[in-house]
Image (tube, rainbow over all chains, first blue to last red; front, top):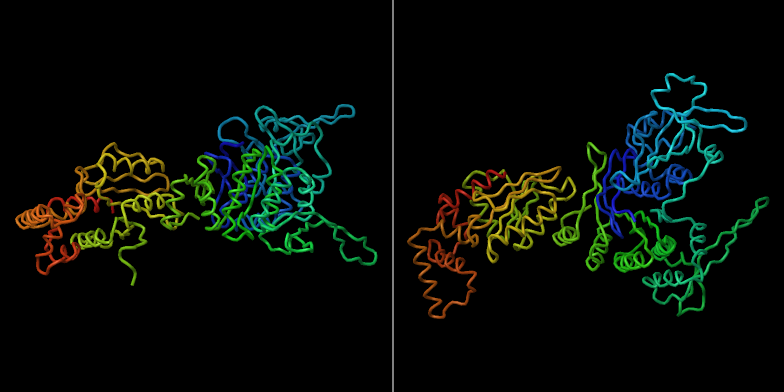
Length: 382
Length: 212
């Protein structure tokens, strides 16, 4: 479990420091304050800077991060080639750092356990069938024949560093041309529930991992917070309409049965709230001994159900040893969170991300008493 | 019309109740400090501390640049009251003196957090309340007579107030027989029935001036 977290030179963070983290951590802030970027940084760290995860952050979530870039950065993007290295947009200022410059640093506060992602010059040495990359310092670059030197992106943790990708290729080539050598294991498992919800395929995959286990019962009992008469959930195939020349695609969708009715219903027909809750519950039970990230917790959830959902999350995150990181803009969500925090001592933290002139973003901590006082006196916390 | 006792100014004085608010308004007017700060009546001493606690880390556009609080020492002791306040401030990273300043304590802001001023009624030294300051502002002969009258009422079992409200009973007995009878304390200051020029009131106004 992360007990603190620090980010440098990632997305809109020049330097963000979150001095204390606990089991359940809620972050608020205005649009563009960096809430989603913080979840991304935690994801990048948890994946141990996996190339797949980093590329997903850039490519899959374009919609998310585009809204968070500054006008200055946007003009840079518009004038660059689309094939330019996609990972550049993860770096502060949206460009890759020069060789030798400080790169992205993510991890717990303090010296140990941080991951650094930066550019590195390599001398290419061909030895019989093997091509080796030998890191060279910025100083010695001047002395070398530049024909044999390439610049790449490397990941460093402590004294160990490994090559991640070339700086010269686009995402398509990056995915195809994996770096050789031992791959880095993720630091922990984690699941993300994005603001705009998971794909059907992802939801089905999460379900398959817990189907017929005790964890399935936890998911179903969570859905009963909204729909008490829910008997059970199953996944069924749903074929897309067939068109000449195109093979039919099958997707699997959740259906439910209610005790008072004979018919089975698609889960999604029962409203956004239950679909959102299903995803949160599934992601939570799939994150055992790891982390659950929820972007815009409140999406689709009626205010009256939110305390029950937080209660479920507080309880199950302890039982399954899951660390939870969630974001919200909603006052209802904050109140619901606070009401559950009240009975759970040191199990939670609450921060607001504020824009800061020097560091890009600052995390302002609220302890339990301060959050209650703000809610009671109706002083804004968002 | 906006409520003068629920100001959202960026230099804000938090007080307990409406009476406190109107007393400060009258003193503010006497010393020409009207434009220096706004006043927010929180409802109780507890609410003052809660609002202070919540305003310090509020989002930038809602966060005051200076916050003053005026609370009675009663019903606590001066030491307990001081701890109650400074414990909260220390949680937000403020460095606080061990004892309050007799002229009103001003604690410097840090990072983006506001400067904080604290005035413990009546004088940052003794137990008591706003009414103890107001009593000093009354004519000494008249207030002594009011005190005798209140004591007499107690002895004749004609009074039901709680011991903690003795000063309040004395003050309002005094106000009851001024012209015109029964003005609230704020209006009594404006009407010069209570004099904002006595040393205790001068010190209080000086404390406000230093903070704002």
